[in-house]
Amino acid sequence: MALNFGYNISKPRVIDIDRNNLRKSVEIIRELPELQACIGCGTCTASCTAGNLTSFNFRKVHTLVRRGEYQGAYEELNKCMLCGKCRLLCPRGINTRGVIMLIKRKLGDF
Amino acid sequence: MLKVAVIGGGIAGMQTALRLRELGIEPIIFERDKELGGKVRNWHLLFPTFTESEAVLLPLKNRVAREKIEVRLATEVREFDSTSVTLASGEKIVVEAVVVCTGFTIFDARVKDEYGYGIYDNVYTSVDIERMFVDGKFAHWRGEEPERIAILHCVGSRDEKVCQRHCSKVCCVTGVKQAIELKRRFPKADIFNFYMDIRMFGPGYEELYHTAQREYGIHFVRGRISEASPLMDGRVQIKAEDTLTGRPLRMSVDMFILLVGMRSNSENEHFARTADLRLADSGFMQPKDLFVNNVCSNEEGIFYAGTVTAPKSIGEVLNEASMAADRVAEYLKER
Ligand SMILES: Cc1cc2nc3c(=O)[nH]c(=O)nc-3n(C[C@H](O)[C@H](O)[C@H](O)COP(=O)(O)OP(=O)(O)OC[C@H]3O[C@@H](n4cnc5c(N)ncnc54)[C@H](O)[C@@H]3O)c2cc1C
Ligand code: SF4
Ligand code: SF4
Ligand code: SF4
Image (cartoon, rainbow over all chains, first blue to last red; front, side, top):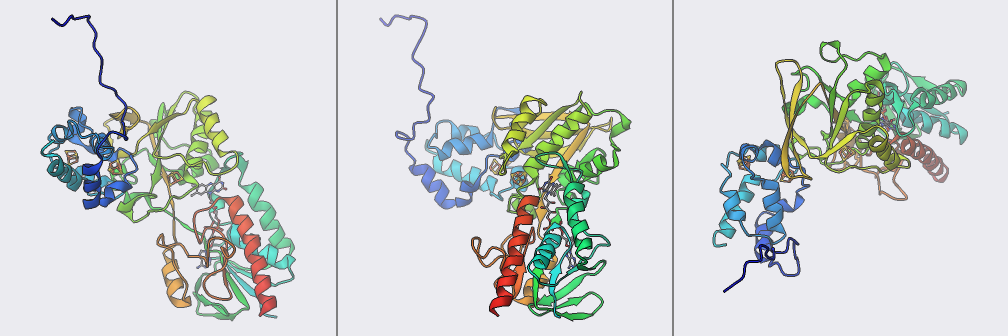
């Protein structure tokens, strides 16, 4: 019988680029290379209705995906209503809505 | 005796003409405005030392007068090549060489209509703030002291949506300088600078940033404001992502200040076409190279000085102007 000592070992929080499989991320960037031009300004998140009401943060999700952190990304992106407001404002001209659909397509089986 | 045409009588034009005279060459300045000085005339105190702009302008203007350099005010140059300039009046003047010192254009903040400049009250540009300091009059809501001020970086710079990809270089430090000046003027106000990257490229600039944080308590929030909307009481509500916490941020301010960028003059295109000159992607004139020939154009006999080739600070402009005059002298000697 496993004893419960009231604590457990939490998963490491580090983004471990040595271990993460960047294949999907490379594929995503190959299809929409403009995503690499993101300057992390947060305009997309600031303008996002979903992000103002829930914990959804598009900037964070796509940055994590680019680092090979795919866990939960698909579910998070389901909160997006594809309204396209972020795309109207992105100063780097990134097709943000296209990014969302592409990531969902690539990570559908994750 | 033929003269060397200096097009534009801002700091670049004045310094170029003065150095040409030192080298024994006769300059003639053409200035569109009724006065010499260019944009610097509109600034109150200069970064990073809070020096009065007159301390830069007066010595230059006085020397131009003392040296009896020929200046033609209210005279716009419409076209030029390496041996002549054509004025708006149609007059054509034959010259030995041309130095283009026509400067830059201030980005029109109305283009970014999501920030409400010219639509809501209490939205200002950095240029308006300079004017308010010069006039000593602050037009803000209901005439009361502002309690909260937001300053937004990169307005009309680094923005594909308005076709201005370049960084305007001087607005970060201008934003920090204005935050400090506003805090001195309104000690009770909380001031927030919204930035994407803080670019403190010059001597004393990083120190000014530090001073703003430590001595003046200016708040720096990393995130670009996405939109502004007016409130019933005349204040402005702004929205951004506080990217360092990863959460959306909302706030009401009494003054919303846009740090407008430096963009290229629209005439550059016409000049490039008529004189066979190269333009950079940003629309600024493209020097022959960015190193030893950074004040030369791709055409013999046509030179550049100052912000006509890219955003620059005053010190950089003055250095370049002297360099341009030296290269003109070399060109005239070798010809
Ligand atoms: C808000 C703001 C604040 C700033 N504050 C500072 C500061 O504190 N410290 C600092 O170092 N720098 C500062 N700068 C930068 C500074 O303003 C520039 O470096 C400087 O103005 C560049 O001088 P210039 O002569 O190249 O161009 P300009 O100042 O633009 O002068 C160009 C001149 O050419 C004339 N001209 C243009 N076309 C023609 C034509 N076809 N025919 C005849 N004449 C023509 C114009 O009328 C003008 O007088 C600031 C910039 C901004 C936007
Ligand atoms: S608005 Fe564009 S540049 Fe800014 S964080 Fe979002 S995707 Fe990146
Ligand atoms: S498209 Fe999606 S991420 Fe972009 S603003 Fe709309 S809901 Fe938010
Ligand atoms: S100097 Fe600063 S505010 Fe100006 S465009 Fe560059 S990063 Fe933006």
